[in-house]
Structure formats: structure tokens, C-alpha cells
Length: 441
Ligand code: GCO
Image 1 (cartoon, helix red, strand yellow):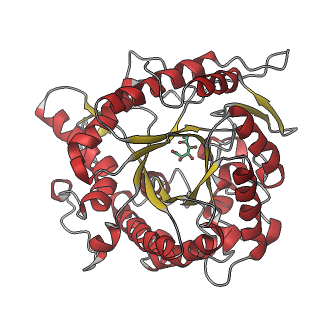
Image 2 (tube, helix red, strand yellow):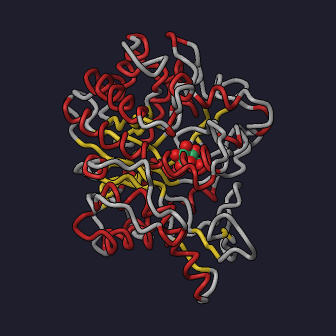
Image 3 (cartoon, protein in one colour):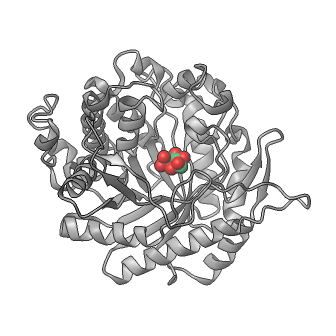
């Protein structure tokens, strides 16, 4: 059965950051540091989903989705990242999962969506190998409580983005700007993925996935240097995280001065390459790169894409990029590619509430229709796609952009917490009622 869903993440929607003994995460710390997040926004309240989850589940029920991808806040389960779990923290997800199941909505739980307990960051965070083992301990705890009703588990959300934005460039929590010295963060997350996959399965998880942010990479020109730059970016963004989990090896990084990821120990890659029941793919747009104009620390430069509509974020809208991505994954990995779930796809738009209380987000309807058509085209070209999750159900805390980028099918007035389904919500509801699978563009 093809899974239609919506996706969210704990720090972006829950709020209630001290309820039930929840401990601080790196995002609580980062968001409260002046200048880190636009307009000083934080996730302290967000969509207040912790208290309003029943209303949000009813919105999903009304939409007619068959699945909901959410993330579990590690600091709600283990406030210090280690030790005995908080029963109140587990109880919140128990209630949420039971509410979903009561409406026939398949829960898909992401273990780690960037909100690492601050106490673990204080012990080195993902630069420290030990954090991988702590993720496995946490995985065992939540699977023990929830795996009887949660069939689909995603270990990590976008380890590339968390490494790059959180540890190489410093734009996200924990705010480290280590550039290529951040590579151990990638390896330790992947090691954590492998250990957590083992722990999840040992405690009854039915399907285990990882979600990678993937992008088609286009060379700015056919020149050798631009083609090499595109290969370099494809290696660091896509292959550095897909090859280990699908092939059990890292791509060749020697061309980028990385001769040996000296944090890799014997046996690590076989742990990382745990069998997968699916690959989660988050797609937003392609990436166009050129060789750096002058001396640069990285062998590529994102030069942007013109000639396409853009979202509020300025991201190009290229639906066929999703078909290109899915078919290229199939071509690159062949039988090593498990079934694919598009675990995030969506766009931010201005989404102002009109005087009559509606949000006529026609651009999002066009975006979703085109990308769902791209999934159909990829399926027709032989890619085994099992699910498609819209990012996002609700307007929410968009990391360093705070609440200024609205991705929801449902508008949230953050002053009143009032939810208003947008035109795209009604459009998608009607299309899902008519189509059990993706439709042609
Ligand atoms: C990501 C994250 C989401 C974002 C979404 C829009 O892919 O960056 O998984 O948390 O909010 O993608 O940027």
C-alpha cells in the first residue's frame, strides 16, 4: 500500500520545552544565543503540538493521509541523553501513537531530527564516537515502548545537513564551524545509525530506514573543472551518506584532500551497512555548482539555478529534479537500493491569511502536483517508491529562519495557535480521496 503522509519534527512543532522533565537540546541552547535565529525566534512554544496534538491528528485524519512522520525528542526521553528514561516523555509519544492508530494513520517515527540532548553535546556531541552508542541505547528504550504500534522507524534525519549546517558552517545547532574537520560528525552519525538499527530490530521494529537529504547535482558548464566540482559536491552531499549505508564503503575522498577518515575503525562500515527496509529521501530542489572562482577551502561553489519559479526561500522549483534524483539513485545503486520513501517534499510560500480567513496557496498546489507527478514518472521508470510525505503538516519553526518560512498545508497563527487549513490542504484531501497512488504530472 502506497503511504501518503505528512512530516514534522519535534523541535519544530512541539514547544513545551520543559514539560515532563524534558532536558535542553542543542537547539534550545542555540536558539537562545543572540543572533543565531532570525528575529530571535525559538522553539520554546512553536506550534504547541505537545498540548494540541489531538487537534493536529484530527487535521491529518481530515486530510486523509495514511501515515504521519514525526520525530521523537531525545531530550524528552532521556533529559541528559543517558540513563533511565522519563516515563512522562514516553507517555507523550504513547498517547500520540495511540491517537494515530485509532484513526488508521501509520506512525513513522524519526529517532533523531537534530535535537541532541545538550548534556551529550557537552561530552563532545557527534564529534565523539560515544554518542553513536548513546543513540542505540535511546533507540532501544523507545522501540521497547512503541514498536508494537510503530511499524516504520527512521534512525536519522539528514545526517549530511546536520553535519554541514550544524558542524561545518555553524548556521545550525550546535553552531560549530569546523569545515572539513566536521567529517567525523558524519561518520559517528552513520555509526549511530547502524547501532540504532540493530537496537530497533532487537526490540521489535518492523521496518528500519535512514533519511538522507539528496539532490541532483548539475555542473555550471561542461568545462572539466565545473564537472569535477559537481562530482565533488555529489560525493560530499549524496554519496558520503548513501554509499556507506547501501554499499558498506565510503566514496573516494582523496581528491578533496581527505585521505583517511581516521575516526573510522575496523568493523564500523559493516555496522553502518545494516540491511535497510527502505531509504528515506528528502528532496527540495537540484543544486548547480561550479569550480571555485579563486582559492577556496571547498572544491565547489553553489552558483544557484535560474529560469525556474522560486519559493519564499529562493529555492528553485524543479519537479522533474525529483524524477531525475530517484532514477539516478536506482541507476547508481541497482539492487542495493531498497524501496524508496520520499520522506520530505514541500515548499515555503508567503501564505498570508486573507481577510476572509483563508490562505489561497496556489503555488504550493502547483509545487505538490508537479512533484507527485515526478514520483509517478520515476515509478513508471522502474523505481520502487513506497511513500510520499509532504513537508509539512503545519507551518513551524524553520530552524535559523524561525517562523518566517511557512511550509505547512495548515496555517498556524503563532500568536493564537489557531490552525487554518490552506487551499493546498483541501486540494490534497480531494486528490488523495481519488488516487491511492501518485498520479501523472
Ligand atoms: C530539512 C529538515 C526539515 C526542514 C525542511 C525545510 O530537510 O532541512 O528535515 O526540518 O524544516 O526540510 O527546510
